[in-house]
Every structure is written in structure tokens, then in C-alpha cells.
Amino acid sequence: MSEEEVEGYYEKTRSESREIIASALPTIALDVSAAILIWLFGKLVFVPIAEGIYFFGYPLPQLLNFVILLALAIIVLRILVDVRRLIDGLAGYAACEIGAPYEVSPEEVEHYRTALRGIFDIIVVSLVYMLFVDFLSRIHVALSGVVLFAIVVWAIYRIWRVVQAVSEEIRRYTTMWAQKTLSRS
Image (cartoon, rainbow, N blue to C red):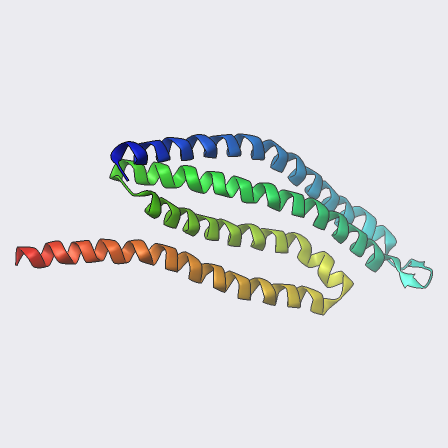
């Protein structure tokens, strides 16, 4: 790519990233507020009140945990869609800010974006699990364990992808360094 094309790529990515960040943040803030309120009322008010009550032979606390879990899942899915957009925007913006002063190629920017997305995804999924774990455990103890197991397997895969994205850049820089060092000798 020519220098003008690279500069245009950076400007386009920065501008798109800013727009994504500006549109996703308010929606995320509102949905997170709703999820926190549902979680707080569910855990601190509704479930404790329902202890010992049965609804048509079923323990009401477990039914309420299921209803609260379902409501949280719907809201969290909405949040995750917007967080994914936000992460893409933040990763694009950060990659451009990190890369532009050093004349990093668009391919390198994409590697940095992949790495940042992977790290953000792992953090977000871990936080979401922490939101759900108590409700999952109250429905059935094994349920939270199965979900945690799946998250750990997925996180290991994501970490591997992050390392692969960054390793491309490390390989390139170490190769360039080795060539410079060996050419001086």
C-alpha cells in the first residue's frame, strides 16, 4: 500500500471506531443498569422472599431463579452484541493509535485488533459468568460447573488465537532485528 492509502486506512478506521464507540456506549450503560437492577432485586429481594414456598409442587426459589436467569440472559445478549461492537471500535481505535506513529501496516493493525478483541472477549465473558453463577447454582449445582468448563475451554482457544495474532508481529520484528544484527557482523 502507498503511504496515502495507509494514512487513509488509519483515518477511516479511526472515524468508524469513534462512531461505533459513541453509538454503543449509551446502550450498554442502560442495559447494564437494567441487568444490575434485575440481579439485585432477584438475589436480595425476590428469591429470599420465596424461600420455602412451593408453586404447584415446584420450589418457587428455583422457578424464580430460572425466570431471573432468563431475563438476565436476554438483556446480557443485547449487551454482548453492543459490547462486541464497542470492543471492535476500541480495538480499531487503539490499534491505530498504537500503530500510526510507527508506520505499522494495516495487516499489523488487524493483528493487534484480533489480540485486543480476544482479551476483551475473555474479560466480558468472565464477568457475565460471575453475574449468572449464583442463579445457575440455585437451579442446579452442576449447571454452573458445566458452563464454567465450557468458558474455560473457549477462553483457552481465544488465548491461543491472541498469541497467534501477536506472534506474527513478534516473528516479523525478531526476523528484522536478526537480519539487521547479522548484516552488521
